[in-house]
Structure formats: C-alpha cells, structure tokens
Length: 509
Image 1: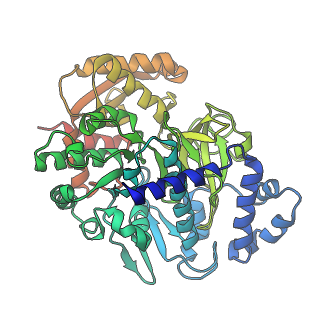
Image 2: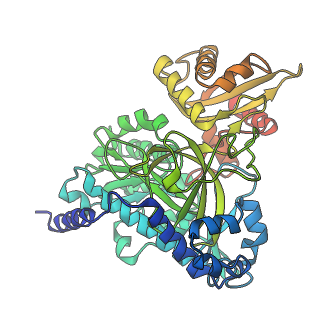
Image 3: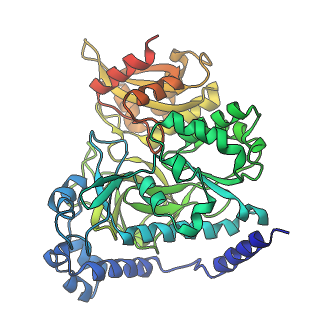
C-alpha cells in the first residue's frame, strides 16, 4: 500500500475542495493591488507616486492607473531598477538578493530584473496551486511518491557584490525548500554542470537510478535529453526507464509543434500541464485535463492589466500608443490578443513584459500565450503575429507531413529591392516535401487567414521562400553562440543582417 502517496493525494483532494471556482475577479485583483501598494508605500517609488493617497482613494484601481504610467523594461530599469542594488527601499522594501538575467528572445543584451523574497514566495504559492490542481487528474496514489525531473539552465549563480545573478530557473532551484530536495532531479550537483552536453550525459547515465514521475523544461531541450537517455540505456521509450512518468510541464514555448515527437518517446499517455513562468514571475498554469490553456494566477501576489494588441493599444509598428486602452481582468474578452501588464512584489509597476496573451475561457480566467509584441513581422504591412506563424506551420504538418520543431524568419530585401518572407525550418526528417511546396502552403494559409498578409502579397511582398534544414543545425548554431540548453529559446524573428548570418550557417554543407 502506498501510504505516503495516499496521504498526499487525499490532502490535495481536500485542499482543492476549498478552491473558489466563481470568484469576483475585480475584488480579488483589487486585494492583490492593495497588498502590493501597502507594502511598497514607504519606498522611493511609493513616495514619488504617493501610494498612500492611492490606497485611500475611493477607486484604488482607477487611481493607480491614472497616477502611474505604463512602462517597458528600458524605462523602469533606467529610472528605478538600476538603483535597487546601490540603495535599499527603491521599488520594494530592502534590497534584492537576486537579479534574474532573462534569456528571452528579444533584445541583444539579457535583461536584469530584481528578484525579491516576496516574488519567490509568490512563485512558490503558484507552484503549490498547480500541485493542488493535480487532484483534477486521474493519477494513482503512487505518483505522489515519485520524483520531479526539472531540466533547467545550470543552477550555479554568479556572485556580484552583495547579490547573485542568474536565470530565474537557477534562482528558483537554488531556493527550493529543503524538504523538497530529496525529490528533485537531477539534483544540484548535476544541475551545476555548466556544459550542456556533459550535463545530459550524466543525466542519461543516472536516469535508471531515479524514480521520475514528472518532467519540467522547455520542449526542445527536454526532447534532446529524453532521446539521449533512451540511446544510452538502449531502450525503446522513456517509460522503459521511468514507468511512473505521468506528467510533463513544458512552458517557455508552444508545445503543439513538439506533441508528435513526445508521444513517440513517451510510449503511453502523459498529462501535459503547461506553465507560464517568466523572469518576472509565475503567471499562469494548466489546472485541468483536456486543455493546454492556463489559469491566470490572479490571487498570488500579481496585479494584471491588459492592453488590446490592435489599434486601440498599438500603432501599426507595434509601438504602444501614448494613451492606450487598458483593461482589468474583469473587463477582458475572449479571443482578443492582449499585451500583458504586471505589477509584482519585485517592484515592477504597470510593466509591459512583451508577451501577448488571449483568453480562451474568461469564466475560468484561462489564457494562452499567443506571441510577443516584438515578434510581429510588419516590414511590408503583413502584420504577421507569432500565433499565425504557428498556425501556418501546424497546417503544413497536417497537409504535407512536415514536422517543424524550430523555426526562424525575416523579411529580406533582395538586390532588386523586392521583399520576401524567408523561413528557416528546423526538421528532423528531410525531404518530406520540397521547399517550394512548403512555401506555397504557408503562403496560401496566411493569405487566406490573415487579411493584412493577403493585402501585402498583392503589393509590397514579392513572395515566400523556405529552407528546410536539419534541426541539429539550429542547435549547433546556438552552441556556437553559447546558448545551448536550459532556458534558451530560438528567436522566431530576426533582423535581415542577423537572419542572413544564421541562414548561411544552417544551410552550408
């Protein structure tokens, strides 16, 4: 009898019964904002914007929105965050012990953002909320006696003056509760191995000694790790090594392009629970079967706002308007792309992090990530968003059987002054369809499903080009640029100069 597993499962079932299924979203979010402003009212930013008077106003949310501007990273970093390491109480009480270095997909230099103990507490609370939601799945009692394999970047942090810096995954792993360390794999020793290939080799050799029931990590790198475990141990599927594996939480990128590959490696059903964990916080998680949509963590220390990603919020170059329409959680609509705005216990106030989300179920506060505000190809008016790119490739997979794990594209101007959208697709199996067939399929899909793209094709956009290359070439390029493994995500959109360098590398040989 699995006594411990039985106790844990019954405890989670009991806790889930007390979850509020029909909350007042505005009141819940008002409460989160009140707590944030009340704790930060004595900080420099709190005094500057007079948080005390905001807290005393008749309409807390409206006054907060009137008083504080929407900001992007370069604005809040230059004005406030750069001072947090020199002086205490700048945007949050005390000084942050950690800085998260974003490994995101936009910008040339990694962003550096404060991570406070209160933010780590928020992340832990959301993690527990997702763990509690496991009770919604039909899992056996012995699952709760298994271990978690979390594939992240190396967990070693860089000591800088009186704080430490690293990716958010490294910071969270280094702060896991002592009682959880025994269930965490691959463990801190192996996680601290800096070289990706060496780390994976150690994991592959040690894998049979572990009792893994859940996996976590970015799909592309988890897939490579699982393949290597299978190769080293000479088995057919990962369940031959970890028969109790029943849950995988991907996060970071869309899972659907990888589904077929994972299903082949798993060999049996594994529940996919998506997560939305960024350097700025843990924002959403899948909490029920039958969907990859994620429940917004609106009761765990974060205040959310939403700017429509259309003419009400942005210009045609995806720049935020001077006076955009801003909505709260109770005001959003399903099926609309919104730029996410956050206020957090790390001293971020009305901060636009650059992600786009869409509500799939407003009643449940469920969202999906649809792209990035800067992952928006509009050089010739095509207004091509990341979710439309993903849809086009899903259509290519369905109609032509081309399974793309990674892709990158750009608007490229030739010597004659004509613009082409050029796509590089990372595929495992070559010659499933010709480049021309794939290009035509993508072009047709976008023309029929994106009005602006269709108009651009009749005017300034001359055509579409596709290069199918081995997925290994993608990883080799990332290794060359020391961006292999862990939390690294492939850039979907590149400027022409960077794209041509990438194209030359992956298409040679």
